[in-house]
Length: 606
Image 1: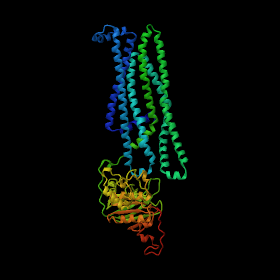
Image 2 (image 1 turned 135 degrees about the vertical axis):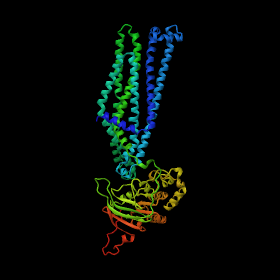
Image 3 (image 1 turned 135 degrees about the horizontal axis):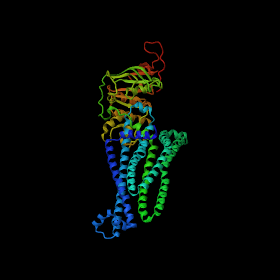
Image 4 (image 1 turned 90 degrees about the vertical axis):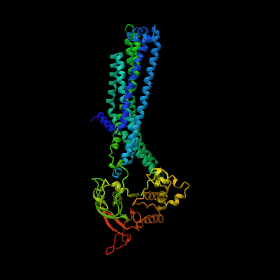
């Protein structure tokens, strides 16, 4: 498939993602384009009688077509034609300019409104993707797709496409006007200029595709280098590795700018050569007409009209070519944006919030197995576990034993490769997954904090006007951070800074715990959430959690084994399955009850 067919296919795919409302607006814009083209014909057509009356007014006065107008106005001499024709020419020029300005305003507004729709759609579809998709993806690609490549769709696809349509209509209108003056010259000029642009398109097509691939790839690498350098700024400052990250950024940014420059040059450069050829054509035509009898008098109106037509024709041709060049240069970015737009939305996307499914007894994991891809080994294999409601279950095991993966499956973030999860004997499926997640609050090891107030971070995801202030304070007290917050001047309205940079590690994690408690979920999952707390604070937080009531089910991955001291059961994972289970005392005991064989020391690594 050649690049032209590829671009056509991409544009058809893009059209399917444009809303019916915008499609209707594009239809109205097409009508406006046709109206602007008639105004263009009017302005070019008016120049011929205007110039003719300047050079040979008697000839115009004697034309049969002019007699009805002359009789209606009561004119008696040829000189009286000058004022009305001057006025007519001026009005025609003003109407043409106004129509072109209106067309520019409408097409620009519609282009950017459509671009906003597409950008929002990409972001929305990305947020609704399963957790497994997010895990497998580099966030730089998504951020670049939502921001950079969505902008590229506006500047390199939508605006140029509208320009090509408008230019095509304008070209037809200008050609019709020029054909009425001199068909041979009009066809020669139009055909000659058109063939030159077609030749340039064919000549630069391959290079534009290379530029397009470079722009799409390197724009992602630029964002990736920025995220890595700024995201690890403390280590960069300590290690003095600024030069390394500047080099990484330069190695991505330099090819990107070079490709963008090449693409821009290819799009703009033909204009100057074409304009020179146009001037040569008019000069040769003037010479040829001047050799004929009465040549100068006849030549000036025709040359004036052709000059005006060329003045309109060449920018329109250049605009169409430049737009086609932009589309070619942006086709790979368009393809990447379309891949994000083609992401499927789940069935529940437009449905109201799911009501929690019944959970009164237990969670059963039956022969649960999981692998991330078909090419990777099993992380979990035929795992069986029962978790009673109201219990406190701790998970230990060496790094890579599958602790976090198991909890992600329980939370419904990952789907098991085989086996089932049952909630009170009801299998967990994609249909009721959201209803199960309504029970769950998650406190990860690395707490994400938005650059907003303490209150907004505790009530994360709740619109500002709907935050329950009393509930925020209660959650903060239960997480053992209320005293600290209330000692600050702005208390719960204190801004935490980007990613909570103004808070200590312990404070960030306690806000994360308060966030889970604000949700009032009955299943709270701590993925090493207390690892940054000192022993005293951790003990206070765990006691607060213990006091929440027997209806609250707590699943904990702990950095310190002592954190799990009050757990109902501790589960040790190894080799994709459960190695052993028991209470805290049984796990730390050197001899299992009823057995003479000493136990291996319990691993306490995350």
